[in-house]
Length: 145
Image 1 (cartoon, rainbow, N blue to C red):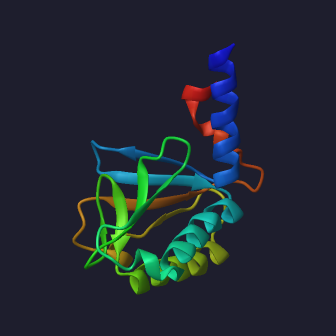
Image 2: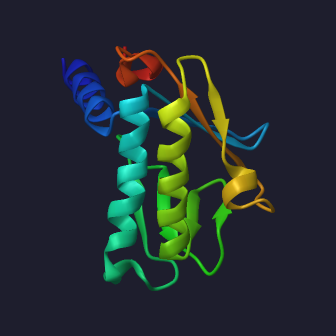
């Protein structure tokens, strides 16, 4: 019974987040899956993080999602690594704006790659995988079903 309750809680958390994320260490890629509205929630999370002066110090960070392994953080230059998407607050704001611009024109099935735009020398890619409007981010997490 307890594992069923945990799975339901995890599903709720994915739905509140609005998108599903995973990291593929073999190809060094963060993949965020969601509807356009769901992926805009990630842009909103970036904007909200960047709007708070308390996040200005290097290494400040915020964990996202039910498993908390994706972090938004503050760093001296933009970077996408195996644990975070980070940079100066104004660069995180620009990333959020760019995401919104790309998502306006996106259709289900599109993949938007952001490393070149945000942090070209980073070890990891950031991919937004656009799904249909009725996409359920919890359904993408096979561990909670």
